[in-house]
Image (cartoon, rainbow, N blue to C red):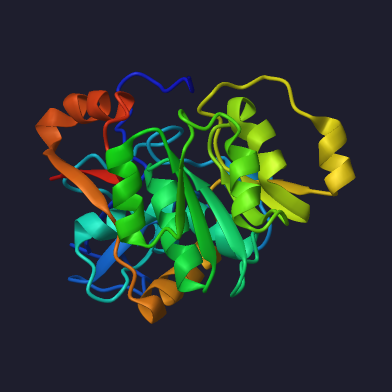
Length: 285
């Protein structure tokens, strides 16, 4: 767990309307609709130690409030036609998936992309990969969720509980070649299967560690396959602007599982912890 100071206002992801602007602000005006950035000090280029230090909801107060005062570079515009709830799904999950599939994954038409589970990042990754012309293989342990993944455009689905060697199964679905990109959310408990699923010179975007921080990794297979494993922690403001352009071009809409009022924030966290959701959970102010 990441320690957070007592009294910290939570929530890194938020969207809303500009109520007022300070002196010298030129890019925004009252009434504008905006969405927050996850690392507000990371404006462009590669991440550096200082650029990821400020994290709303963790190191500074977040967006679980009716009124928030931030510098103008801490927000961007919304995609066309997005509601505030839809836009708030982009700050962390959307941008992480964008970098994992597009920026770092370098997806192109005809690629095979493997996504794991039905959380916000994985569903966005499926949507971005399909918009880029890729074939998507998706995993879940729930038959109901697997059907929902198919409805979203997944070309193939694998029940990882019924198929423990799902990495080999994914590779078989590519004719034995292996997938080009894996969006890895599990960490040490799933990484070996992701490596098995990859083609030679494939790429793994490591964006989570749901199975823990430590575990056995088949390092020999990594260099034999000459794999590229890239840690992906959200992205810069410039990445977010590029993602919004991509969303506008493709007409992508996020999948929202449920919406809770602010006074039920604790219940929303408990629902997320139970892993029953499909897509994003939103808080309405």
